[in-house]
Image (cartoon, rainbow, N blue to C red):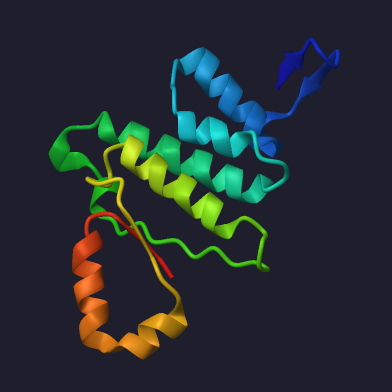
Amino acid sequence: EIFDKANDSLVDLTNNPSHSWASVKFFDKFECKYLDDLMDMIGLNSVKGKALELYMQISKDLQRDINARVCTKQSLNFQFVGNPGSGKTTVARIFADILFDLKIREKDKYFETSGQKLLQNGSKNFQTDLLKVIPGVMFI
């Protein structure tokens, strides 16, 4: 818990990712413009919490010897589900930018498509499209 002077109250950081991120930035001197952007969005506490957890895991992992790293060896794939217009692509782009900022992705390159387009274009075109974006991010 920390004391929030503006609201004259204690804030439980475990339930508020935005406050947790502010605390990490202040005390641990972390900076990530993309995580700031996500924390500025309204709602999405579970997504913000996952993003912060991911950021902290990877940040700590990158401080280890290269042979002892765990996070950088795992596949980081995410599924964002929601109604049209709910911000899935915006949040997915922010996640991709966070991974690029942490140097987990070598390119800040995106490729956007739909399941329908993939089906229409066939598997060979999918393979070509996938090779164009690796090691970037594909939005389906």
